[in-house]
Image (cartoon, rainbow, N blue to C red; front, side, top):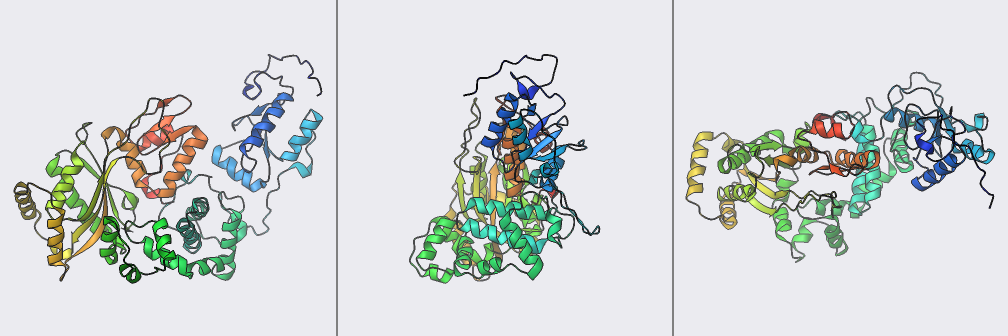
Amino acid sequence: MVPLKRRKVLSSHTGNTGNTGNECKFPGLVLFLLERKMGTSRRVFLSELGKKKGFRVEDEFSESVTHVISENNSGDEVIAWLDSQVKGRGLVHLLDVSWYTESMRAGLPVDIQHRHKLQQQQTEEAETETFSVPSYACQRRTTLENHNSVLTDALSLLAENAELSEEEGRSVAFRRAAAVLKCLPAAVTDMTQLRGLPCLGDHSLRVIKDVLENGASSEVEATKNSERFKALKVLTSIFGVGAKTADRWFRDGIQTLTQLRGSGHTLNRAQQAGLDHYDDIIQPVSRAEAEAVREIVERAVLSVLPGAQISLTGGFRRGKPTGHDVDFLITHPEEGREEGLMSKVVCWLETQGFLLYQKTTRNSYLEAKDGPARPASNMDRFERCLTIFRLSKEEEKKKGGAELTETLTENLQTAPLCSSSRVQQGGDREEGGKPWRAVRVDLVVSPISQFGFALLGWTGSKLFERELRRWAGHEKSMSLSSHALYDNKQSRYLRATTEEEIFAHLGLEYVPPSERNA
């Protein structure tokens, strides 16, 4: 081993946070190694090597950085990343890691040659519009106006197929790529417009290129027409059926609802209810129907707990005109008053014949002093009830509200027990004319102390929420859930009563619900 040389410690240089314990020989240079495509372990190794050689290497990017070192990234990709980090940044050298390794061998900064500089794509056609977006979906504003629906539909189908095959990594990659295209202000017409954009992997780019050049992707068309995809899509559309169950049925030769009904397979309560009401549940729920359900839920909640608050969440809160279900978040301004509410609400709804199916789970969330434990799944632990509502059609919705409320109150007072069997019998009597439809409705109860986090989590979109958690963990060393936000560096919970406060804790500009459609 080569013996280490003694170095004089230069105490005159301040602010050298990247070289604690090492002499800073080149104070005019502030280096930052980009982890993207380099990897964490290699970045840590190279950073420590640079510090030992007397270079000032920063662990976090700041406006003081003069040289950005990257590996396997184009200049456009690095610029896009920089733009997502700092607004109004100054000029910096964008260099390949080869300059860094050569400087390490020389023990001093080598002259920057053309081969060291990251190349940016030169576009000859000035009229070709190029795009630049931040890396995380939670930094972007995505409305319902999608200028690239043909491209995003193709990527979303491949994401869905990956989900059905339980390949979560591939599914998320396609979802992230589609989310980037959804937020663009104009249609993509040429692949050059995508240079430097984040989250567009090689596979996604091949699909996009195929669609732009041929009008459709051969891979997407093949997937769409495959027997397995078509069968699993139908089977997983049954309420209560997941990818594993659907795949098992498919391997047993079941591809249609008719085959499932005649197969003799034992179904649980949720699956049987989903099969019984399949035709209704697969139909989109309109905003008018969602508002009709809201009236019923509000009547139920306020009848058993005056002063409670009910919020319509999910896609409808983001401004979508239709949805596959209706989600409600319920709380009370006085902490603790919400306890025991769900069972009373469900009893009220069952007694009045509004529920075709319901399953309630208790609140299992406990706040640990040393921070939240890693949950078994991404699902939160609020008290919730997954239901299938029996919603009257338009002619029944027009009945007088006061008269209906009076009748329901009388029924509630004379009904000591909740009986789902009575509800089902009532439903059977109306089945011939069927002046109602089945609608999927989820009810969630949150303590007021967690309501801001619950509202954020239940508003979605699913990818937007995933990206919020990823940002919190990777960029802020925090843990975010629908219950709380925990700062791992400070070892404390960060309290918030509104979504705006949560965004502020995360160092993000507030994004309203209508712009979270990632």
